[in-house]
Image (cartoon, rainbow, N blue to C red; front, side, top):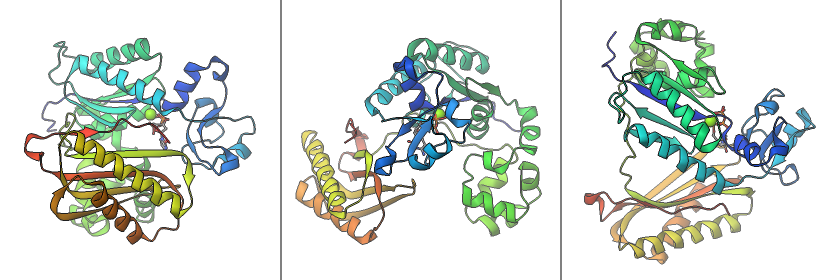
Length: 359
Ligand code: DCP
Ligand code: MG
């Protein structure tokens, strides 16, 4: 099989927010806990400890419902600054081994260790060392997956959680995917999985029985990707800290915003922050972007490009408000992002992000 000889690691922290809360408060250890919003204020669970997962408590569940499933469940409010701090620590660990690090979120990243700073030939050994370093530096466990591409490394890290280390060698890749349920394929969401079930596709073996054309017919643009991944082919490179070409501010609220007035007010506040930051660094942009995440984690993005560069708050405010009004939203909002792109500094690849604190 063609593997282009890469060595990719995917690292994902174990029940990230909850593990940090248990680390920092010994009274929570060994108990079913969940980080999230209060049931009294119609909050949702961000994540749950392994003790709580036994009761079926998981991300995005309404806290009220979670308490019904597990009456002893302890709800802990999130402390985003602590999570960011840990995220920084683990990234520093990654950079000890390679600069080819592509963070996917606060708690997970891809690393290309084909060549690495310690000249280690075994990627499995690198992964073990990374896990040890994380345990030492952050007192937390991570799960790692090792393989020759991103897709398989990601599947592998999820295979044996928590504190797992799974390698999928090239000669084992197809066998590994044969019986892997489509739900465990990264990139296959719930809706696609349901569609697959209707087509009697339950696992990698079933998927491989479909031709490229058939997959394209049923799954559109995703068809080619599906055709490749079930054959163990994924040539996407690890993108080290992509030079992002935007300035943005994102906020997750500890309680969802319900009133339109509050949502718009928050959007305008963030527009002001983005404008301030742009002015401070003498940057202007043409495209305004907003991102709205609803209570159920569905996320919408909208953008509009002006015919001129600006960093004026009054311009960004108008754009942001127009973009939001056009959505005609009636749902509760848990996250808002406001940003500017198409920057006049794009040629030198400037990138800035506000350091966020939750409101
Ligand atoms: N998160 C969230 N809402 C979600 C999913 C996740 O707020 N719907 C947050 C809380 C998680 C963190 O992101 O702790 C990392 O997400 P993961 O999907 O990696 O979940 P965990 O790390 O909590 O658990 P696992 O051990 O399964 O990776
Ligand atoms: Mg995780």
